[in-house]
Image (cartoon, rainbow, N blue to C red; front, side, top):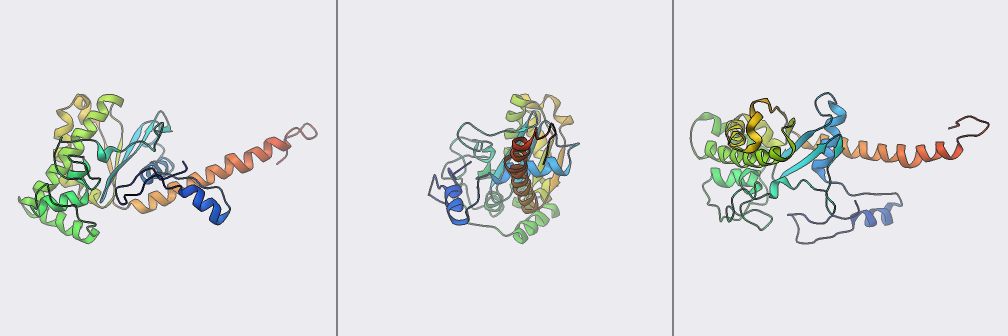
Length: 254
């Protein structure tokens, strides 16, 4: 809520961003995980589908998760929780940009799909970025026929599927939103993903698991942040003011 504890894009940790922004702008500030904000936005966009239990997975350069259980955003005791992309898929496997090996992200992140499609080897350093246009071209090549591009998406689906299957073994299946540029290639990912889920304890009801896709994460992240800010205004500014003035003349006054 106050600091960025860790990110794979910088070696610096425990950066007190909330304090920095409050000092600079003189307004209350909190830190939020981008994938958690995607989940918040989805609940406001489609409350019929995304209500009590659901999952938002970011399929972009990195792999992230926003998890809602029993109507509440799941956060850890110390962190924002939901580091799905850095669960281990294969011990001592492909090099992840976090510096560890075998993470789900090291097979399903854009850089990992790109690395496998280019047959660069699992020890190759993750590239800093792959453009959305390059990923769309890669997906188009994978759809044209069998080859390393299609195999790269198969490996991504397998990693995501085993990860989700393990999660579903704990919480039961829930609706899933796949968000990000690689969500537009979900047709290439889904077969291997479902096959992997079916091989896990969480796959007992794998056919009932529903997926939806949203290829652009930025609007969701922005909407989630906006709703978070508006809820803060409602609860911390308007609501206390109403309570403080209630009872005047026997009536509630706003």
